[in-house]
Image (cartoon, rainbow, N blue to C red; front, side, top):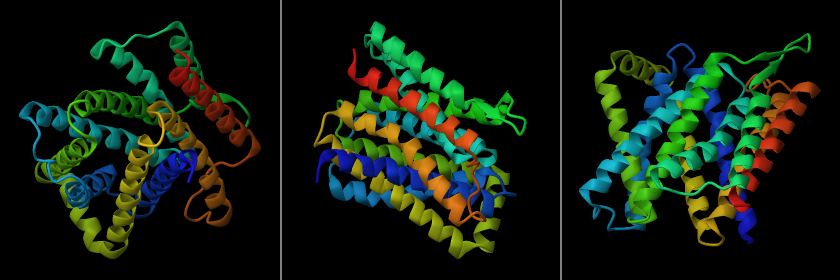
Amino acid sequence: MNWFFIALIGPFLYALTNYIDKILLEKYFRSSGIGTVLLFSSLSSVFALPFFLLMDRTVLDVSLVNVFILAIKGILGVGVLWCYLIALRDEETSVVIVFYQLVPVLASILGYFILHEVLTRMQLIAMAIIILGTTIIAFEIDLENHFKLRKKSTIIPMLGASLFWALGGTIFKFVALEENLWRSLFWENLMFVLVGICIFIFVRSYRENFISAFKNNSKNILSLNVLNESIYISGNVVVAYAYMLAPVGLVLLMNSFQPIFVLIIGVILTIFLPKVIAEKIEAKHIWQKIIAISVTGVGTYLLLFYK
């Protein structure tokens, strides 16, 4: 199979997990808040650990310094999820995901300061184009066709999520240059689980909501979370495999297809399963999303390949 189609599988699987997150938030955890989803997602990472251990039996042979760095990466991962869930709770999935296109912009800036990477004039132009694309989606079109800035509960959390993701990616790159991929993934997910355990122990409201939700809908919740985690891990594995078939830049460019898949899936679900997912699919909203996705996609392409 061509590497292009293999690399596309990852963003498609990630798009599916975005809608499972939305369903969990709206159907099962609307009253108990994002803390419940956060705990389920972080604690579910424990199921990925045996897989990474199977892929590399030397995952424990990591220096203490790198363990500490990956611990920070795990904490940042929880921060990404927390901010993302805050935005997803009250906003359309197809809108929220576009903001993730800011990650390469922020990662480039952090790479400049932390890894001493060079930023060319073309990269700065590409970053400005991506920012323009996310600015387009940052405004909402109301019933009178007026543009107004979206809620702070959407924009600010997604800026935070993108920053945490970019910082985590920069740290991960720093460690992965010394450790291999499977070791880094193992420790990252282990720290994710440990942070989830700490939240469960020390945040009483999250713990009580988590236990209550599990008791009331244990079968459905557990099934959806296991499915969600399995899809997400599969996406990570496919992307890791694609890295071995093509240049990293080309594989990273495939991430810009995730908002496209999210938009397509959202339209299909809204038409055929409106009680499950309801996105705004009027022409003006669809065109706004298409333009924003296209602009950020062009910016991402320029950022990765025109230096």
